Length: 119
Image 1 (tube, rainbow, N blue to C red):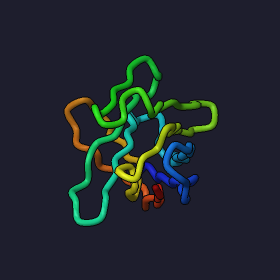
Image 2 (image 1 turned 60 degrees about the vertical axis):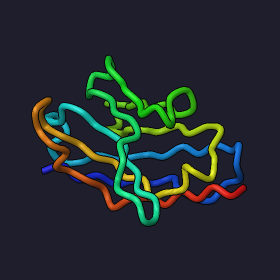
Image 3 (image 1 turned 180 degrees about the horizontal axis):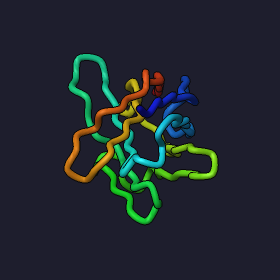
Image 4 (image 1 turned 135 degrees about the vertical axis):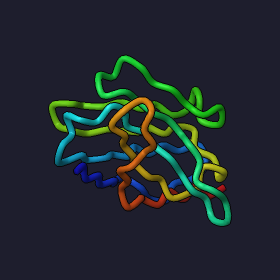
């Protein structure tokens, strides 16, 4: 089992920055990839960014590319999402997720952290 706990959400004005953190515990050595997703009110959950556990590979959705950066600190079992130049469209609950294999679905999820961007 892998447990995930997000933190760092909050309220910020457009153009501001936030850094989300995801603390992983349990069988973290078995995790193949970690990701951030978000869900805005009335919308489906969407992919934001991911990173493999070695940190050698990352990917981003087009909507955040160039503004968000995903990183990890294996020594601390932490994954981060640095969010810059935030817009009201980034307002959502952000979730940390993990999966155990390239072919697997994301089976481990945190409880989410709210990010609110005001104009």
